[in-house]
Length: 600
Image (tube, rainbow, N blue to C red; front, top):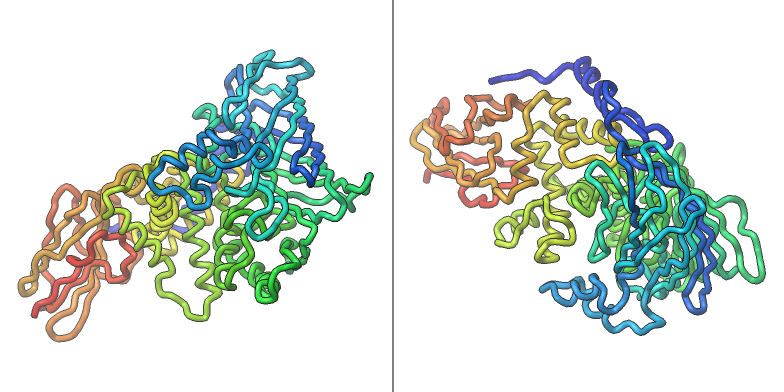
């Protein structure tokens, strides 16, 4: 069956019936004809006083929470991430019991002394001026409200807390291996997300995060010789007070707030034409080779920003900061923390990856605790393309490494489906290959299924329709279906909800007759390259019947292949010399040894 690609006019109609821009305070609609979609909103105002001598700080937090849900809320939950860095915490025990622990963590948490641990201690909490009952349970604060929050109601929570910055172990901490004093991520009591699936008050065990959109107003008091960078816009020059400075930041429409500070930071700026100001914070004590790398990085970061703007959508903020800190590379609102003692290729690569997260983690903001592949995989996909665009030696398939990683996972015997919660993989290596490699292959292979131009339109439309809107996994496939008019649920279900594999075989060639066989359970349309005995070649395209359409192709389109029928035969025009399934290798066939058949 041959279906023409829908016209541009039809595409515009379909897109106009899709998602709409989010109203300013968190209520939005995904479809113009319904007002059923909602999301919560929270505004933070915090005053923080940091003691850099003992790495302890005091905080006052005013939080205005808007219940945009149709539900009455009786309890709320806060994340207290720093509590993970204590002996006996879930992060500690999990790291010591999983067979392949993250070497940055290992058993280090179990050995922390009282002055080295992290903690956030809540001293008081009020709801609209009335004290509420609460209990700290590991990395989560459980709060019983004094009055239920009604649909549409706004409430104000006031909290006093004190905290201690842990020794740098994972993402956050003090005095990292490169000597950065303070890498402050996941450092404040953060309200958990509540959506149509309920609360997401996950304990901090291993990795990913999820948060509520809102505006931040943060006043940070710290020693006057410390240079501070991170999320948000600095409101004027810092105010001096008793040997300290008060840095006042505002960050609109974000779901997290991160900062880093060190007295030896160099702060460079790079102004992009028609774009944001790029900030770079790195230690002046770095060896000259690394200082040179950080200077070179600045213009290339602007090129990366241009690439992502062109291929995903426009970056909406006025600044972005690349900051030396942390324990590797991790993305945050308007910023990233990365270690800085790297070769230039490594420094540029980690910056490309973390910067790309801005679109898929901070602007689309899917629940990366549940759907980590939507964040890590899509980011891997686009950052590999961006790095290839900057490379003098262009690769024909910049995602070849991701394909190798996924295929190795699929053949390993330890693969779990992409529906697995990020903390509940049996092996860290299985998580990494699934989230980064298989997630990237999902997008790359989507181009094989629907055509690269349609895939690229899908990504841009998906971003435009769902930015600031916490999309769910199926949203990108529905976007692709609207663009192509194909049925694509089979692709989504098999590749993300199962561990079914793709494995097609050229089983026989006899004169003009070619027979193919489906061995794996996952269906796919087939690109087939045929070489005839006279030296000429011909490409064939075998549509997948359940897809109800064909991608744009210059190949000869032949009859559909129904998935439940394991073999497929047809006659070519001339006597056949050799046959190859998917010469582009953009289909993630887990056994390519049977993809080629040659008559000797």
